Amino acid sequence: MLWTWLLPLFAINVVIMPAVSSAGANMARLSEKDAGGTVTLASGDVLEIALAANPATGYSWQPTTIEPSMLKYLGSDFAGRHATLGGGGTEFLRFQAVAPGQSELELRYYRHRAKAVIGTAGRFLVTVIVTP
Image 1 (tube, rainbow, N blue to C red):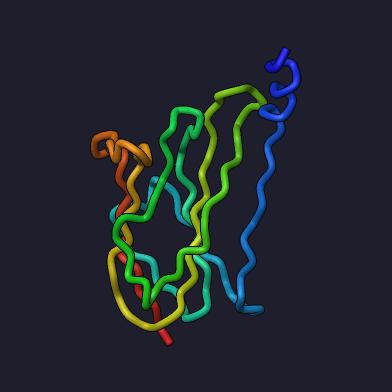
Image 2 (cartoon, rainbow, N blue to C red):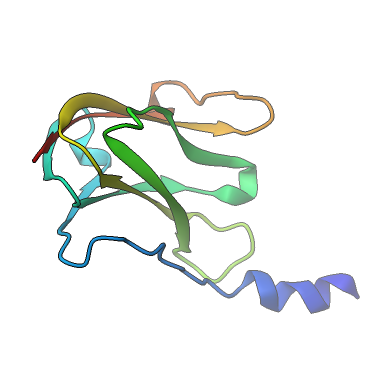
């Protein structure tokens, strides 16, 4: 009986966007095809990275290499492709450029407790340049 109550909750996909502090900020959007590339942002801009994910497996994308004085991690959201329990979808990770500089941003797809990474497919790396 518990599943009949919980199932409708899992079938609903809700995406909540974190607040961005700069009113006139631009947004740069990246995906898997941009891995290994370079993105240039102005200070105050937001970087959104969309990557395939399935949180029902216990795995999620996490920043593992980030220069916090240059990029602020705003958080992530998940949007499912299907309204099915355990279905995959896209995880959106957002960062705000806060100071000029250049650094690598690395994301890893792993289970929080085990820190087990899924091969090279579980890694996203991009060079970020922030201009004043």
